[in-house]
Amino acid sequence: MAASLRRPSFTACSSPTDTDDEGVRGTCEDASICKRFAVSIGYWQDPYIQHLVRLSKERKAPEINRGYFARVHGVSQLTKAFLRKTECNCQILNLGAGMDTTFWMLKVNFPPFLQLKPLLSKPILDLHSEDTLQMDGHMLDSTRYAIIGADLRDIADLEEKLKKCNMSTQLPTLLIAECVLVYMTPEQSANLLKWAANSFEAAMFINYEQVNMGDRFGQIMIENLRRRQCDLAGVETCKSLESQRERLLSSGWESASAIDMMELYSRLPRAEVIRIESLEFLDEMELLEQLMQHYCLCWATKGGSELGR
Image (cartoon, rainbow, N blue to C red):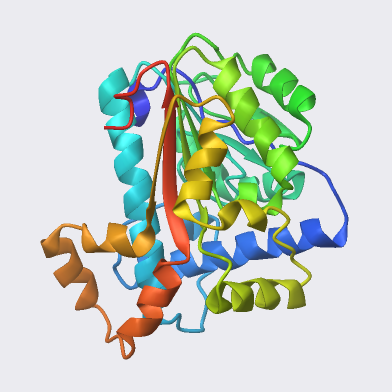
């Protein structure tokens, strides 16, 4: 799949220093550690995560592991559908990718994460042994993969840096944001969504984040994050699946769909469900359901409604 992509993966990172941004960076590390643990006990395979994320000695709860499995599976299936439809004649922009290991995606992150990327230098160099690879403190660029440092809230700076890495507005483009937009104000995330919808002739946007945040369980989630100095600045857009769809449509996307993660989990291939549920015992199914009903996977398209199917 990676070798067929015409463009590299990129990462753009920002350099804000206030308390909220530090809290957001903390959630990235937590999520990466959870993924590493889930991989270590067999939920899915990721041969690269060991190069970037430490293995926690603390065992993660089964409902957390199953939640991450559903997240990874859902985003992967949509991405594969996009690649099939475009026959890999496309580019992928992974926004706020943190310590993600999907090398062939165009990534946008806080600059400090870019400084962590040298941990991945060996697998990156191995994959690009026939390419010219350029690296400096805030950018890595090759013919197939690039990481850039920019702030998603500064659209002009983001666009300028992407263009320096030869981003094409003519190629079908997949944009991925996992727990990214919710940390931006509604106005900031709307600006990003509008830029994405208006910049490419044909595009698809995948968004994974919270939903149904108006109930008691959602409030507890918000309070827990606030205690860690992490505010969900965009939580008002996470009221329901309908509000998630509407934000995409109102930003210029032609079609939009949304599903909560419990519904997605119920649609997983039965063989996969049996396999992952045999990995460890889950004591309270109700807790899994509550957690998964408060996250969703959304996708929108323009210039080609079949891109995500």
